[in-house]
Each structure stands twice: as C-alpha cells, then as structure tokens.
Image (cartoon, rainbow, N blue to C red; front, top):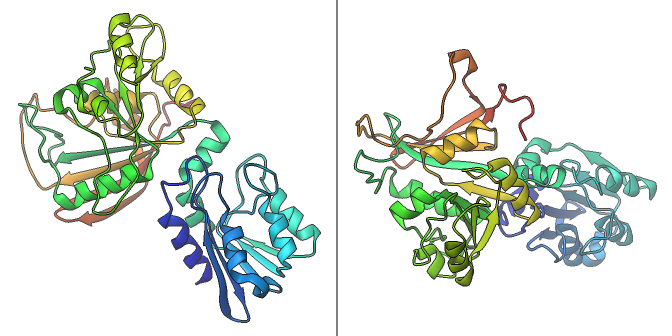
Length: 365
C-alpha cells in the first residue's frame, strides 16, 4: 500500500523532471504515514528529502518506502543516502535499483554500512516501467522514442485527399496532449509540418508543459512563417543535412530555430540525429510522424514504444497514407513483433501499446 502510494505520487510528476527519473517516497512510523514526497524538478530536492522534511522528528526509527534507490553521489543536490542516515531511519524499502552508473547499488550498500535494513524489489517492475525513458537515457545517452499514431481499421492515417481531421475521437486526442506533456520533445517530418501547419503544443484543460518541437527536414522546406516557428512557445529544432540550403538555414536561425546537421547524404541520418539530440539532454521524444518517418525510424530500430489508436472507421483508398511506409520484409516470420502488448478502450477507439522486437537488427540502439 505504501509503495503504491509512492509510485502514484511519482507518476503524477512524469514529464516535469527533465532527464531525471520520477521518484516518490513515503515515510511510515508507528503504523502511520509521517511524510510524503516526490521529485518535482531537476536540480531541486529529491523525493526522500521532501518526505523526511515533512516527517521531522518522526523520521527517527521509521521505514522509508522509495520507488528508486536513494542516490549516493553529489550531483545538483546532496546524496539522499546521507539524508536518510542523518534522519536515523531504521529501514528502507526500495522498489528498484538505480541504473545510473553513479549509483547502481552504491546507495543500498551505503545504507547497509550504517546498519539500516534495506529491502529491494517491492513493485520493482512498476517502477522500472515508469522510468523507462530515464533508464535508457542514463545508460545510453539516447532519447527514448515513443511513437504515437491514430489509424482507421484498414490501417490509414488520412483519406486519399490527405484529410486527417480527425481519425481518432476526442478522448484519444486529449490523451495525446497528456503524452506531449510527459515527453521532453515531439518530432514530426517536414511533410506533416507543411500539410498540417501544426503548433505541436500541449492543450489541456489545466496548465501543462510544452515539448521541444523537432522537425526532420532534409531539404529545409520548413517555412519561417510556420505556426510552430512563429509562436515561440518552446524550442524548435530542425534536423537536416550538411548540403541543405544555406539561405533557408540562415532564415530559420534568424527566427530562433536551431538547425542541426545530421549527415552528409540526401536524407537525415536518423541514428546520428538521436545521438545529437541525446547530447542536448533530450531524454524522451514523442514521435508523431507520418508513415514515411514512422517507417524510417522503425526500419533502423529507433522506436522504443508504440502507442496506436485504432478508430472504428474504414476510409479505403489505395493511395491513402498508412501508419508505416518502408520497404518491408520478404517473409512474415521476419515481421517486427510487439511485446508486452496492452489494450485499452479510449472513448470509441482502441488503444494498443507495445514494444517492438528488432530481431532483424541485432545491433539496434
């Protein structure tokens, strides 16, 4: 019960901790909750610090439930292990170890050195799944890419005219804005930017965070008059190639757009792009591309998670855009399968979530 409460608090802060993990903490003493805390912002107090501060004197002799191993190193804030030791807690229950190489079991070892009983593994899988983006970024320095798309029952993301308003229902669209809030960046292809002229902001009934906007644009066709450029709501990054139009590059940069060279070929090197975005400390990306970008990312193994909204509609049309456009495989046995598949009814739509298995790409990032 206490760990579930800690996990619930952590989940509520998803999207607002930057490259840091979401963490919740509950301090219990004498059968009563003495303190609660969650990590709310990178550079500010960790969950344990907030919970122990609330507990005050009741922290002595308490059990501390925390969703991620307490840190043992000095970063932007002091180590949480020392704060727990200082508070004289008698027991710590940890959901899962921190994959950060600077922690990775050292926090648990430090607590045990001081005679504090430590248990690890309670609801560990729930904690790991909650921090899947952090777990990848902290070990590989690459953004975690979640692809979101909405399609009809016959696999189309728009009509043959290009009209896509709207494939999915209002409930699904509202959930997408929550996903935007929970990811550091959103990425689309330039064709989508030209066709839809989207803002790519988060529009919820409550204040929310706006993601960094990323456009894959090999030939720099994005107009400086595009809404996502003009509104200045959040950063705009354009991924292009070395030989792209220098005049258009200068124009975009004059409007505050960051232009990154990702390869010297005709098309953006997507693997290089992910490494460059990782260097910019972008830990999570919501991919809302069209079929070509989705297919290109999938083909080289750069999509970590797929969220697919299926609407109860049939649109037809041999030329209607599809969710994935790529060369494909020769045999069904070579198809990319989704593991850990879950299903959820969202309004009149079916939402499928799964993790692609790149068995055809043994060295995929």
